[in-house]
Image (cartoon, rainbow, N blue to C red; front, side):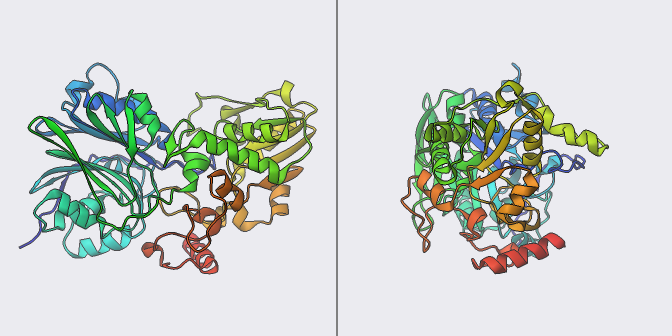
Amino acid sequence: MTAERPSLRFEQAPADPVDKWADDDKPREECGVFGVFGSEDASVLTALGLHGLQHRGQEGCGIVSYDGRFHHERHLGLVGEHFSGENMPQRLPGTSAIGHTRYATQGGTILRNVQPLFADLALGGFAVAHNGNLTNARDLRERLVEAGAIFQSTSDTECILQLIAKSRKAKVVERFVEALHQIEGAYALVALTNNMMIGARDPIGIRPLVLGDRDGSPILASETCALDMIGARFVRTIEPGEVITITRHMGEINIESHFPFPRRPARSCLFEFVYFARPDSVVDGRSVYDVRKRMGRRLAQETGVEADVVVPVPDSGVPSAMGYALESGIPYELGIIRSHYAGRTFIQPKQEIRQLGVRLKHAANREVLKGKRVVLVDDSIVRGTTSRKIVQMVREAGAAEVHFRSASPPIKFPDFYGIDMPSVDQLMAAQMTLEEMRKSLGVDTLGFLSVEGLYAAMGAEQRNAAAPQFTDHCFTGEYPTTLTDHGADRADKDFQLSLLAENAAE
């Protein structure tokens, strides 16, 4: 007997030809997931929740709702461009809904890869939204295709659907758990079936997921800021390796937790605190805003310099710059003003015009910068292209000195867990010494927060080298899981660097 194949319904759309790194070298946001169960306003609340998670992905968005049958819409672009208006309940009716806001880390920017993905299975419909990245998706895909599976997208998330379809377990939850045991990497999942909503977090807890409640309706979301957006109450964090099922029986909503993996403390991804999570969110019990301010304080302790003014690179550098100013006693000023109305794909054919693109997002406040010794504080440095342009802009505004400070350690290793981080040959800190970076950026001094300082800001006395408390591979090269698709299952830094350089050259 052949296991049924999922019937996947996807629209076609052309790939986006724009170079994602052409106008901004920040680490690209991951994705955001959101779900509501048992509310008459499910699709509207999901759309609002996705607004709160828009910072986690701006390339595509989708919502699946259920009212006895499944309804789904997926679009390229921002949430507000597609999910608004009084007709939302008519377009996406039902008392349960899940949604996703996407930045492509696996698969291209095409409509068929936008989530939630949906399949018609013998046991009923199944929709799933995924934040993270599977490090064995390529291996799984090859094995599934050999077994007869037909893939409709290039997203790694479809592997989960295919595994569920292939399973012979009697219940959907059992199939879901069986699929989880076959995937590797990072994931926060929200799924919707005919009679339940499911949430799951990877066994290490790399990606965040929280449970909320709004007037008796359970909510699942990537971040607490999405709960705040809809006036929901934070209930608790989903634990690493936990599978939570939400059902309705005899008019009562039931929430059950399952732990198919050994329980362990969360190893939150440090980049959630450095850059990705919104500052008003709480991730694994830590206020992102407070952590970033502590990062700035520690940065001042480790890399202090005589200066006249501390200036953040907005917006992500703001809390750390505030902490730096508080610790150093140097006045904090808004020396760079950010425009929130600039598009993300301003690409022009002439190089000299392209170089002006940074000014669409950032403008120098000349009265603050002129004649001053400036400490520029940003969250991180990736390729260095944007940092270089900002430094040039500050100098052109009349700054006497420019001292650049990164509130994270040097990024020397790529990410495989849901962050679109460039290959090792594009990472500035992996290719240059500190002095070479200083000269390349055109600054008087350059300083980074140490790994130990970042751990201290997180509330850890020191990093446990034998068992790190957080996921810190971008800084240390020590990956917390096997990297099946990348041919690496050990945390040997020299091996990783040589391997990643080979991959980048292919």
